Amino acid sequence: MRVVGGPSSTDLARKVSEVLQLQMVKTRTKRFPDGEFYFKFEDDIRGEDLLVVQSLYPPQDKHLMELFIILHTCRDLGAREIIAFIPYLAYSRQDKRYLKGECLSSAVVSEILQKLGVSTLYTVDVHNEDVLKKYKIPTFNLTASPAIAKYISGKGLNRPFVVAPDSEELAIKRAEAAARAIGAQYDYFVKRRNRHTGEIETFTKSMDVEGRDVIIIDDIISTGKTAANAASILKGMGARKVYVGVTHALMMGNAAEILQEAGVEEVIGTDSVSNRFAKVSVAPVLAEAVKNR
Ligand code: R5P
Image 1 (tube, rainbow, N blue to C red):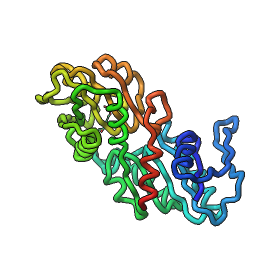
Image 2 (cartoon, helix red, strand yellow):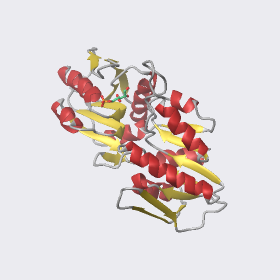
Image 3 (tube, rainbow, N blue to C red):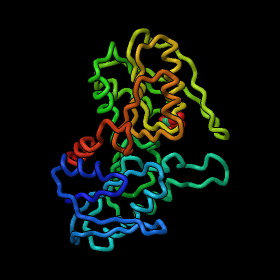
């Protein structure tokens, strides 16, 4: 098997190839003057098993089109098996019609990936696992929460405590996994989102955080409001330092300022998103799963 690095995840692909001790396939990419994407394999890939690495963080549609072109080329040029590693699986929030007449964007992504020959999909902390149930191929939802918690714990925390900013089953599972990794306790907040306005409300809940360092664990930071609400409540209850550990630090707009104003010490993300918050790699998380498959 060899690794194909997509343009959104070139560094991550290199790390994946290192931890799995696999060769990278040589490729060439460019953008035409009108913005269209060009992709070329410099190596022969006929009959080979390929591990394609491309995360779908914003701009999602640009990264999706790059992925589609790469996968089509893999299939067309005779790759034997195509395994996709897509740490941030975009469009995973719209898995059902919450309002009449809505699109099913997660189904668009799953149908095209399968049509283009992906035989196995690995992703990390997908927003909603129901999205993966629609696939007819094997899918694996890995979690980066323990790795993130260990990284933050390495800063030398005072009586650490882990918190999920909402009560979704997956959010609680992530907090539990993070807490277990560092031998800490955990709890969760209850949050409500207005489907029409998008506004969120986090309900206050008493937690034993006085003088302690708290890690808020989440899958995505988009606007930052969910984690900021939780951080403000925690600081109000006397938490010493509040860290935000997040798998996909999308950090849209002024999310960083919102979190800083809420008293957040530091945002720790992964290389699922290529930005300044990427401090933990998801490459070892994938490597562990691939070795055990
Ligand atoms: C919500 O269910 C997710 O787990 C995240 O908490 C949410 O997507 C974060 O979004 P934002 O940063 O915009 O509040």
